[in-house]
Amino acid sequence: MTEPVPNIVLYIAFAFLMAAMTITLARLLKGPSVNDRIAAMDLIASIIMGVILVYSVLINNEMYFDIPVIISLISFIGTIAVSTYLKQKNE
Image (cartoon, rainbow, N blue to C red):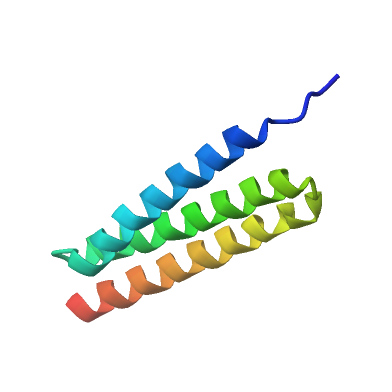
């Protein structure tokens, strides 16, 4: 009933994710403000989650599906911590 995803689609997804990672790393390094850098860090976490999921589909192993959930939780807690720190620093 479910057909496997062709490998070329997964390789194209990897290419797009790597292009997004390159652009995001440039924003992280050049970001004119701290807010831009925080947003870039969140986007990098999301891109890494996408890479892990595409890789999991590529090797046909669902064991890696739990890792992006953990990364998203850590990323969320980190963003809240940095935002709270910056808010207290500015007051």
